[in-house]
Image (cartoon, rainbow, N blue to C red; front, side, top):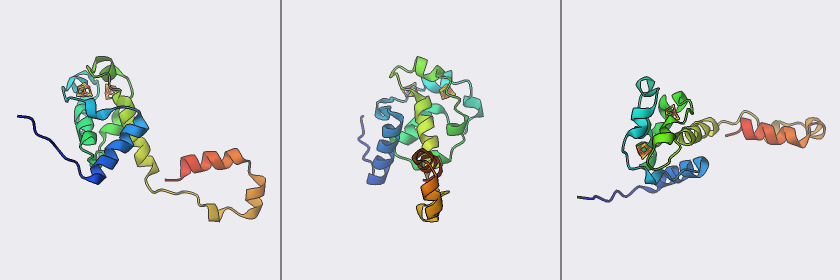
Length: 134
Ligand code: SF4
Ligand code: SF4
């Protein structure tokens, strides 16, 4: 019997965020498990690639704390075999990006002196704020 799962708003937001960053439609994953069986690193992971997809589908942000998202080596074996054509390496990369961006600001606008503001090229600001702010 089919059962409808309704996500809380925060879970839906997390799912949409990962879909937006990764460009993958994660909801189409049918949990067949082929990715987990294909991945050369599954034994080293704390959750399988299929589990990673399920957690994202359910909007469970604790997936950000797993080792799996860092162990994925983007080898694309799972994508080559996924019947839904999903690229799990993009999903893992999106999760890493979210982790790296989470509320960590290594520089602040107010800390830049007027002298520095005059001297530094615009591209320095773009690069720095992109890489060093959450
Ligand atoms: S192989 Fe594709 S459809 Fe199957 S569980 Fe993995 S991501 Fe989902
Ligand atoms: S892309 Fe990542 S999850 Fe997929 S098979 Fe390679 S290491 Fe495993």
